Image 1: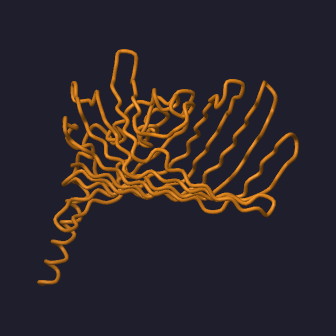
Image 2: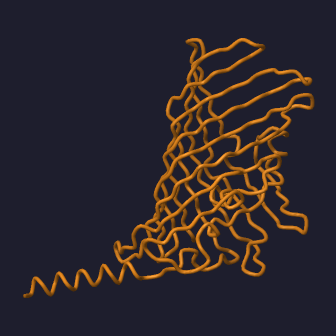
Image 3: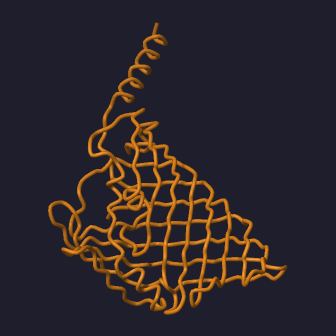
Length: 288
């Protein structure tokens, strides 16, 4: 009888957990609050094809990146941040490629130590960049990038286990962390499902499954007489662990990244590169 009662109680607890509705967004961000994001991404060796002046070269490429960003909320209006400062404590990207049997490795830390201040204006966002060795053309791309409140990818109402929702286009930018990148267009959709609600070490954790199929197209001019058009397609999915006690987040993504880049100089084709690589991304966010 005691075993039966225990099993019944356990089943009741599971039922209550399944019926419980929770707020995934959490409280609005406040002035002085800091969010620390750590992102580690890796692409496995993928096939790469480069065409220069009609000559095709086959090879392989892989990358790894580590970024630690401290984002401090400076000003808030009507519950939404209007001035934010981002400090790149760590910003390191390593790319390895092999073309015609020749290996090449490059490391980029040009953003490490940089401080970006984003201020909302009547015309959008203005960005100031300090402490970076980025070239002028890259700085121009960043200067109009807008702040993205990643909490907005979660529903604005309480949800429970089994609930599903979708986001598309602009909100995918929020999920990725930035909006308003000049010349960039985001298209696609993401689907989410809350698959579990559990307690770990006294913390309430919502477990979410997500799937993404999105395309980013970007156009820029690295030099006055040249243009570069880039298309990046990402497909895959992963898991998000949303701590509802302190509103920290950990997420894991696995998928495939396909990239095409076309460059012209003086109106004439100069180079085309295509590559396809499996990728993994681990990201954590902590509110302080």
